[in-house]
Length: 406
Image 1 (cartoon, helix red, strand yellow):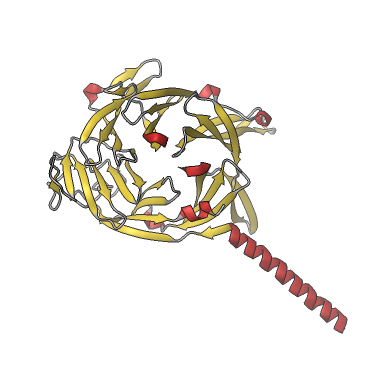
Image 2 (spheres, rainbow, N blue to C red):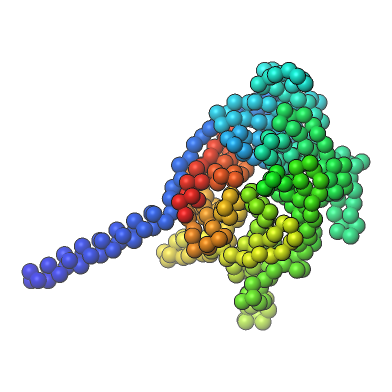
């Protein structure tokens, strides 16, 4: 009897140690990343406010986008028709605003040549500012929509060309319009990515009905390259024959002349009972690395699925979901996410060594997702603009620590 009890105790202790080790490993694999709330703003059109909703409280159809450079935050507020620069304490430093649709600034002064001001405002007839990027000179590049009379139509691509890029210097003074060929060029189609890479090269990714077009420009706005990625000629891994590719999004490396194409692959579901295709389901997801100078594919990396676990009819069910992509930091590290009930699951993947992966969780209250936009800095800090029905918050998570611990 004593031997049986001794054996039971040993078995219990052994199982406890195994479970404890398993739990410890699981917790070590997925970290909870601390969040810092930096500033909050009222919703509205006044000087220090952000216009994110219409009168009925619904999210505006005009985009609002965020960029972070060297600890400074730049917000292109489409609904408010203004571009704002804050420091990490939430102090409003300057504003470029449409004076026909915004009230006159109360505390910001007009920035004049030769006059030193620490906080200022410059008027400019912004229409629908959206994507925004900032280079090492603190020059601002922001996408805007042209008036109807300046729209072009590309009959070959069957798309309206109505977007331009406004270039402002670090003082908020307008420099030039950028189009497809450079300063004063043909308008762009819908722009989905705007970013700065090495040597202050500007990268513009446009979405077209038949695929994507990526343009690069030097720091003076001169076009360097133009690349087309047709939906009909997307790459497929050799061992994945028969799958259907879909180009989800494009990310830009901040420290090299490379872009990352995120392609999701699907296969057909065949219903034998009715002898027909019943639908599609995810097969896999890959990152393809492209050289921006010559358009060559340099390789690919498979992205693991996010395993979502839930209870269905008292049974534990695991569902494989495709990650979405935030963007890229330096040294070839990419950030992906998948929604959770109270935030997002984060995956960091190293394209130079795909076995090096880190996972984390960021907490976001569902009420704060009435409006949200995220951005990854070159250093790997994840920042966001979140809003409920009354206020907007500027927050960040030190995801760079997660990435640098790989």
